[in-house]
Length: 260
Image 1 (cartoon, rainbow, N blue to C red):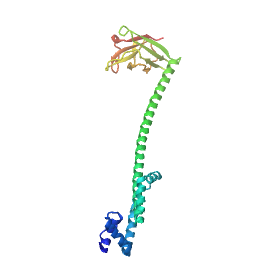
Image 2: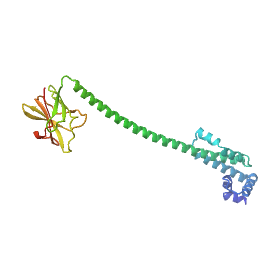
Image 3: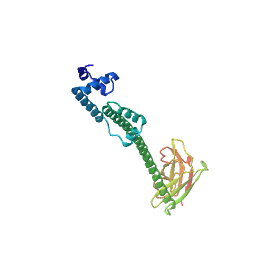
Image 4: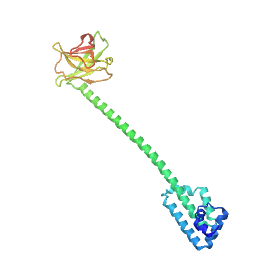
């Protein structure tokens, strides 16, 4: 191995990265010790390698540094390197490798933490949306219940029982009527569900003339508001096609009750 080969063919770089055989490494070390130009080139190359190692590293948390420093394998490696004849150079390289490893572990650790936090944030957001929707639903139900109770206890509303006819002897409905405000509510909980193309229709009988008071579906526990009625002698419910009819189909009358 000649002086020119060491300077021009990468032997110094190979020596720094520990890619030379033991014999070649010993020969390069001898040139470094004896030749000032080679020694200066070696020190300059060493600084360049260390600078690159620090340049591409990232800040490492104290927890990760402590974890690596406490690893017996890492400490054994550092101890071995420090005891060699080129301890200064190799220790610098070992420190660079250590920083690179620490940076890698630190990056992976914070990436994992970020992924977990992002997942938990998505779960929390979905849960908050679900709770908000549930709150709105419950709040609306409570509002409806308060309105229903206000009707039930108000002395302004008359309670009219509509009993089943021969067409539906077990059927029953209850009308809550405030003639002053012309408000009409019906509770149809005891009426059976109809086919998809049919609806119940409420009629107010005024001097024997039926007046449309609106259509409704029988739903358990419902308390439905109907069309305004200012005057009525009785109320009746018939079965009509979906959307209602202009005049009642008397043969389908389900319940009937006289207004008090």
